[in-house]
Length: 159
Image 1 (spheres, helix red, strand yellow):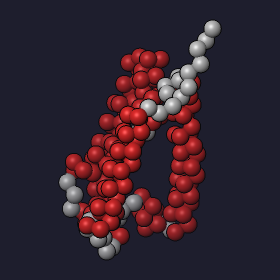
Image 2: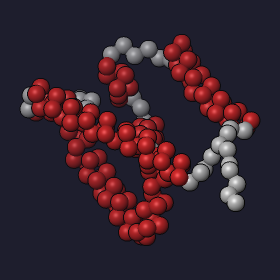
Image 3: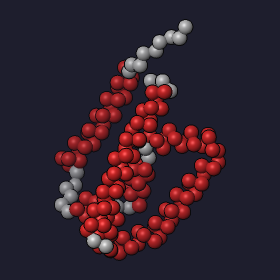
Image 4: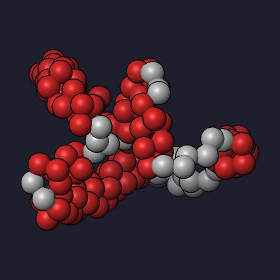
């Protein structure tokens, strides 16, 4: 006979979850009242080009991490072994290429996004098409990024 397990939060789960929400809200409230006021788009998007490489790098890493990465990387490594290292090698090579070829061009032109570059290089229609393509990709990706971990957690009875 299979024992039925109910999925409920314990007291510690509620404490941790509530603390996470309070800390996140507190950071937002603090910066709303005491944080620096950005007056221009340049100040908001690139911090007047005054940030060091460490916070910028940490922000990039955080933006590339998702639950799919956290759950999928061990599974891919388990299934394909060391072949998964080719992704790491390709990321390193692409990062070097971007840092030494594309970023100097963007920096010299004082632009904040690839879409701004597309408008300067071609025209506004190309910029809008690039933006719409990216938006469609992100809508599709976010559905997968939310559904896949939820499915994995549901199947594994992790709760």
